[in-house]
Amino acid sequence: MKLDAPLVTMEWVMSVLLNNPEVLKKARAEIDIQVGPHQLVNESDLDKLPYLHSIILETLRIYPIAPILVPHESSEECIVGGYNIPRGTMLLVNLWDIQNDPKLWDEPSKFKPERFEGMEGGNREGFKLMPFGSGRRACPGEGLAMRVIGLAFGSLIQCLDWKRVNEEEMVDMTPEGSGIILPKARPLEAKCRPRPTMLNLLSQL
Image (cartoon, rainbow, N blue to C red; front, top):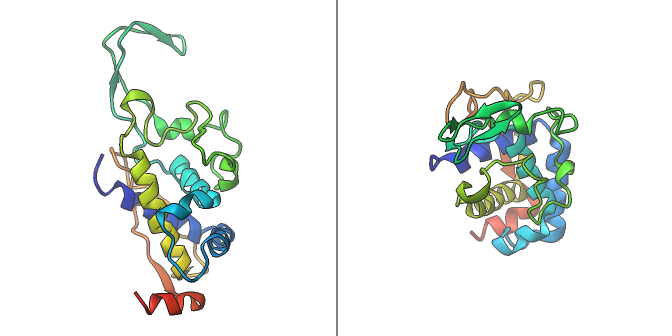
């Protein structure tokens, strides 16, 4: 996977939050309570921020970085969905379709981080959510990616007030075509300014 995948994820996270200001407000309140204005979010704080974690998971569910998982090969003959799959068949898993399937998810097109409450320990409900793949060939960088995204995202909303460039228009969430990585078709543009409660800390950096 490309090295810019965490950046693409961050852009999706910030875009979806700008379209859901009540979620952004709730995430900021969690950080204010658990971390406070006298220090920046650090790695040891992430376990105390379950709602932040839920926002990242929900974003990865709706906008997975890799909508099609890396190719796999069937090691044995098997039957999937009534189809006979010979041994040695190249298999492509449509991750986006699984994670947006109305048979698996309640209101799949709606951004609801609350659906992941209680899953901060890693429970993914089987194979419903696989943004990093699954099993022995899952992305080995999942743990690092989730912490990097959590720290960057947490710092951005802890330190800055964010608004859409045009409050009358929602951020365009159209993905860019098809490919291994799923970026936004239109790069995110937003307005931000330092939060008054963080000015003292930011002036010392």
